[in-house]
Image (tube, rainbow, N blue to C red; front, side, top):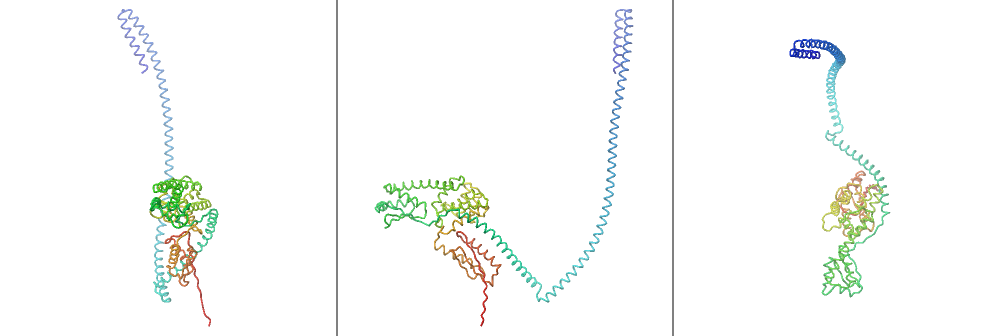
Length: 519
């Protein structure tokens, strides 16, 4: 297309020349036409040359492009041929593998057929042998029945009883062996820990008391306390909720009441009234109310001091108040606050020996009896304390130790076990608690009654103030192995049916005496 451009230019020039020649004149036009023709020829010659040059260049470009495409085609063809070759090689290998697998499958099928044939023969032989064994077994059973004189069912029962007795004896011996080994190790370690805890804890002895004595400056004060027609004493008793006993005892009056907190309020209020000298119903009510508020504040302070003394972390204010309130509570004559402090210390020492959380252990031990300080709640004090501690968001381990120290709920941590053990140590030591004669006798009778209820028991004796019960069994009915299990069963019954401080030891005695007379 490039060489057509010069030709078009030449034609245009010729036409223009022709027009000029026509307008100027024939002569001039001829000359111009000649010049134009010459110029057009030169242009055509140049155009031919240029077009030839362009044609050569295009041919070169086409040749190069063709050579390039041919090279790429050859490479692509080579690669495809290589892939086809590889695919043919893999296909050949797969065909060989398939042929090998087919050979293996044929061999396996042959082996399977042979195995099935052998198995069928084996089954036939086994069935035949089983039939022979069954016949032989029946013959042996018949012979045994003839020899022993027992039927098959009777022989089974004899064999079963024999095996049961043998297993029981072996189990009892093994249990006794394990128990003795474990007991030796556990008792040694436990004794060491408990002895250290007791030795490092100061103990106070307490005496049950329901009365307080207030000393008077003179007997004339008795008349002023009674007041005209007894109005002062009635107002005092009504405000304090206790009984004021004024008798012939010189220079003393007795305050009687089961609530130690009320007795303390009454005692302090009476001392203030005597010191002030103004004793009348209005003044009595005012002083009693003021004294009660002072003691309430003192209770909170006592609780904070105890928590600080035991190095326990911050506690809810209401729980702190209940701890302080323990000062005016008692259990079996033992002051509740002193008891709780003692339990906390013993528990902390044992927890330290065992590598447990000492602070958490002392916290649980201090709070274990807070349920006894709540008057309006009903139910076992351990469960009451459990609910209170949950209400004030105590640690779950502390809550569980409070609720389980009398096994009202299941123990969930070693700390709960330590609290229970420390509680028993504090309550069981000599002189720590007092109980009425009637309760004491009933406990002894209950101990002997539980032990006597077992078959084979001859006599029972509750000794050591109910800390031990000795059980004498009949040797013809109870053997040595059964004696061990019976002791455990009696202890379990005592735990489930009785309430008692500390622990009770069950000693079972089996003795066989053979007597003969020589005449």
